[in-house]
Amino acid sequence: MKQNEKPIHVYFMPGMATDSAIFEKISLPKNTFEVHMLQWLIPEKNESLKHYTGRIAKMIHHDNPVLIGVSFGGVIVQELAKMLKLKRLIIISSVKCTDELPTRMKFASKTGLFRLIPTSLAGYKEYFEKIAVGDFLKKRAKLYRQFISITDKRYLDWAIKNMVNWKCEKPDEKIIHIHGDKDEVFPIRHIKNAIVIKGGTHVMIINRYKWFNEHLPELILSGKLKIKKKQEHIN
Image: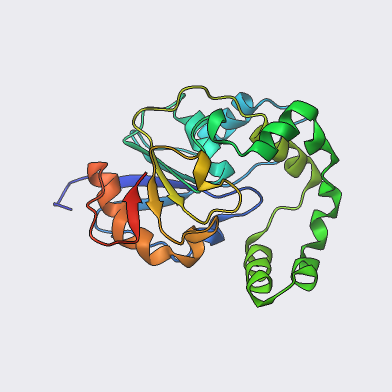
């Protein structure tokens, strides 16, 4: 960055029930970017997604920022984009319209079954590892448990409701969508027009951080990705 040139402000929004710890290994060049971490708020009673997002918007103190959201955080930054003028909008392991939601979430939305999820048990996250079967699942459960930080029932009820009921018919044309082809939450078969990371799972922001450290600066600055390796392609 040249002398007297202002840094590019990048705001990260974590996934549902997690905090900025999921970005702890993400590193952007400090001479070009200034990183800020957004955080979840406890919803007000019967709070709409629009009103909630408006409260998150008050945490953004710079013009033309870059917004990067993971999973449900990707939904939040898309809602923020309706309120703010942005330099760049990037979502990771998320969806950019209702059509990309998996069938089970659409079914839960139509039937109201999401209300039956026992969110009051979220405080027992230490048991996730104990009930997992097999070494792979135990490692995945440990990873989830490590980064789940919000167990407030009101928040979880609100977040699940607004995720499965999110309405968006037409995605933002300028959005950059990064998705793993092994995502268990939002299967790749429902995702269109994304940069696909081969072998990437729903938690790839954590375990594939090297890819993001290499490519995020380029994506933020130019909005494009130069394909240099076989592990990523445009879907």
